[in-house]
Image (cartoon, rainbow, N blue to C red):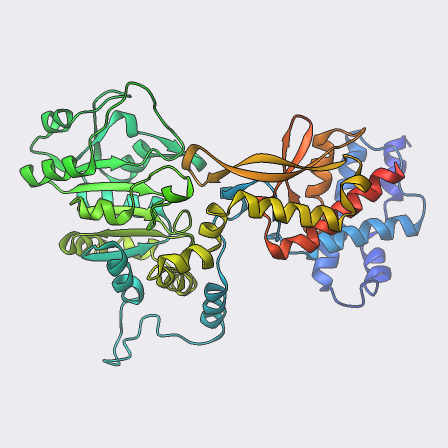
Length: 470
């Protein structure tokens, strides 16, 4: 008998392990999860033996039980976890984008706990429209005649194009045919929508006459696209929303603009670049405007479509709309977020995304000093953790070239590598997500919440203790 077969025969039997192990966690874990976890562990060992990666097994039952306990806890834990965002990217696509304020959380809980009037008109006692719950508020805030909300902005673009330009031509600037995260390409979306794309202009310069020269009998829509995390600088030119809307009126062709991460507040007074607000684009005369609910708006994932009443009515009646509609949880949180915008000053404080984006660097520095004091002060830390200036990012495809002045805890990995320490931070019960710069780990404090600080302190103290023991 060769060594592989000997090892395979020594692997514990699932039923025996399950029988001996089922009471280890006090009956808190379903038997099915125990069985799956044990089987997956043994399958992993079996595969490693057969491939030659493993030539020995745990020596006793205690070692096996430790392995099984770890596997069971992992199998029984939620896959969607809370993490601490130390990257300094405010609207972090991979970490869930915008956070919700307390009002939204309360509304979310209410929508999940109780029955609601999701599609019930309380005045007539008959079936109502879920969109009516937020449409008037959106129109109040944007100045649009009508509005509809779908499950994300990609869906908003797809639905609008399919409604307005199916089997017809849509004219778009060549410089706006971008690809953003998740391989979302404007040309691909247009193709799926059934619209025929007509490119005009050059990559860096497109003029009004480029659009006008391309208009023909099959032209159904003029499209303008926010270039998200892509910028062309230098010798550039593009057609303004006002000029494109004027051209649309001249030829009786609707104009659509995809703003991407649309904002309702001009954030330039806080040092951010001037971006057109949704209100400004609507006022410019654009017929349809699409934007995200979970980026600069600071709400849940959603795609918001605003515009002229007759056009929005056509979009609402598109059969595809039912496949893209939002649920009660999105509506509940979106309404509370939108209502905050009736008072801009209040929105800047109550919506976490806006609060983080407009945080004063000095207040961030004070947060860092407080954390250092809790860790024992700079003298005790001996340079292992320093408070240094850094640069945060907006994220979410918004304002890609712009950095926000910030402060960070810079952690020296010591004899270990930064990448290895980064993995250690990522493996904590509540993972700490950092960025690596110059072999140091950056914990940007702009995106560290007050509720994160006790957890962050515990992780950093464990890291310091680990360094002392090595």
